[in-house]
Image 1: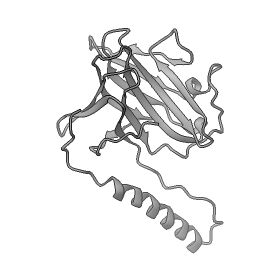
Image 2: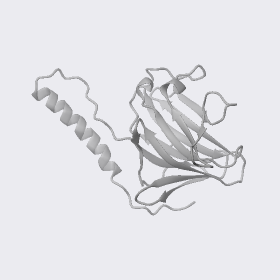
Image 3: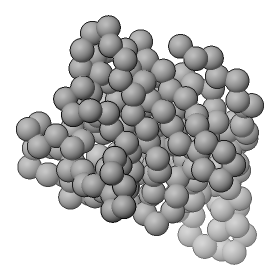
Image 4: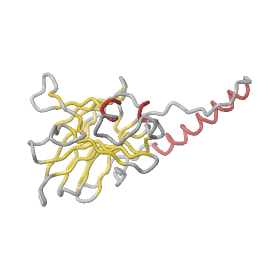
Length: 212
């Protein structure tokens, strides 16, 4: 596996900033005499890379654009991304998420959206595989011979073949990539992610097994 050498970002500081924003909002509501209700800071949604087992994940690009390279060597070796910042949201309150990726040859890999809830429920959605239910269809990207795109909407997550409920609380929202054959090497690029209309930055964090 490739050892990551990128400088560590200030993600720990980001977590502290979220907590501080919540405390400030509570204090202001008390000062102006408003009824005190649970106040949530507006969290920044970001991408974090992760690997589990025989897999690798790498950062590629420059200051203007960074994409992720996901590599798997075994069917149980996962590389992927976590959409950090949506945890604690109800499923029916999630914004549409769009993702552009460059897949490998058809039939060589599996790409899924995995949602884990606060109650421990896990639901996976096959991406671009109409033969597996539930699934999220992918479409070609106009002007690109290789890229595909998906749009994850609440209606996808609450479909007839999903176990998720509208009031389930999200604990982990992640995408997992793995190869389909043992002792092979398959890779995929994730070019961009949008949450609502906002681009989701890819943080240059140390890569850990944080996908599940």
